[in-house]
Image 1 (cartoon, rainbow, N blue to C red):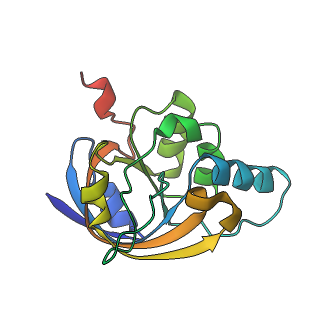
Image 2: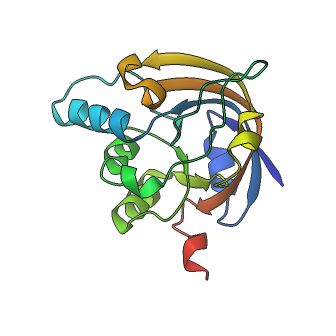
Amino acid sequence: MKKITFPITNEQLNDLRAGDRVLASGYLYTARDAAHKRMYELIQNGEELPIDVSGQTIYYVGAAPAKPGYAVGPCGPTSSYRMDKYAPSLLDLGLKVMIGKGIRNDDVIESMMKNKAVYLAAIGGAAALIAKSVKKSELICYEDLGTEAIYRYEVEDMPLIVAIDTLGNNVYQLF
């Protein structure tokens, strides 16, 4: 099991290989379909994003409301393919890590290799377990989107698997 920290360093990125199990700590952003669409439109119009994605991590999640004693409610990953249209634009701006579940298309994988980024898989069905890793949650923008707003999470030992590494090695193609 490898330990990594967000924001991730280039040294950590280069050390990750498809199939590695990791425990991630540090800070990441959350964003799902609606937030990605808004950011994509800003990029297309040459406007500034509400967050600086350079060197950052985005977790594809819309957490449920927090229960007492927790920073967030259950927060399992959403299907990543829904962000595939938008991901290359964010990767070109320096996004280094995406977290979700399921396969990615060839355009995303090519962009990941070009931009030296990784895709980490969170375990679907483990939403309550993942919520225990989130220590703080702060609303950043797009409050009108509710659970799909962009949040900044502080995580500790979030369990993940390297699904696609910077070289394009892909656990979904191993089977």
